[in-house]
Image (tube, rainbow, N blue to C red):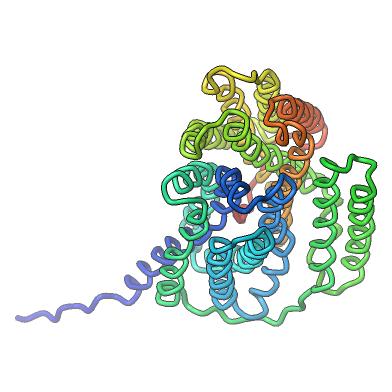
Length: 472
């Protein structure tokens, strides 16, 4: 008797497509995170070729993280309004074209325009991609998928420094941007084949709020960067910082008055959310600033090549990942408070070791131990920040809280580079270590103060995660 051969179940095809989609979305997200740090090692080469000073080089880093973080909440609202897949493809297209613009830049203005374009594209892409992941997977599979997504953050930031060194040394600094082109085009072609369209939902767009918070943060970064040259009492510095205060105040008033705010201001009165945001801001500021300072120090003050500088940060990448892994284990056992305080104490100790940087000697002996210790502590702090913010809230608040803490992640990178670049300005300009030592001392104090504050600010007990982690 002949038995009919069963046709492959359509569900099997959908199963494969879902995981293919996760792979493609992860590649896209990894590319966004990579671009936060990939330019750090290339900065001296960019500055030399385009004749850019410290102030402009600082903006090369912060222009991306500033627009990425400042517009991310608006990007999430836009994904609801026009559909997540459409928003994702638009963001990826813009990011890819902006990467081409950055790589072809022959002056500082064009390069900064390209970096801003990358940030806008990332702000459209990242929340839409996360929305697709959370609606495509369910139950235990969602936990696995979101675990893959969350792991991209620390790996991408650390890998960016190494990849930036390799590309700058072998192909030229332009390729830290050109590398995004084949990846972006490939993902653009493949994504529509694996990611179904998600119906859009009516959503109000808080454009005034998005403009105000981005302008406020821009004014803050401008004032911090100007302080390195004009002094803290200089007119440009005071104008930038004063303007930031006024714009942030206006933003809060708009958010309280609008029917569909970017941020529910009431969340900022919740202790766990405030604690997670503060931890994320400080940890990101310190880590990205250390990458920035370390890259410039090794190449400007010590004459290292871009490749040697990138290799120097490989153990730092391992330490960041190791710290995050241990941090996650300890958080589940003893809670976020001791992990945050201990991680920041390690960061303070590592940063303090860096205050003894000599003008000569082997950087692998004098520089690397401090970086590794600090990176391990900051990796654990990232875990505590995320679990604290998301582990003491309801499921209904998880999405908005995740976006809020994610914004503090990007803004922290901008503020950290601006502050530490300003503190180290004298050393960067003269090619000496004095300014760097002062900057690392500031980092040690900031980490130590935040460690003490964490003992009071972070709630006691073990968090109970809602299942909606950080975007990266």
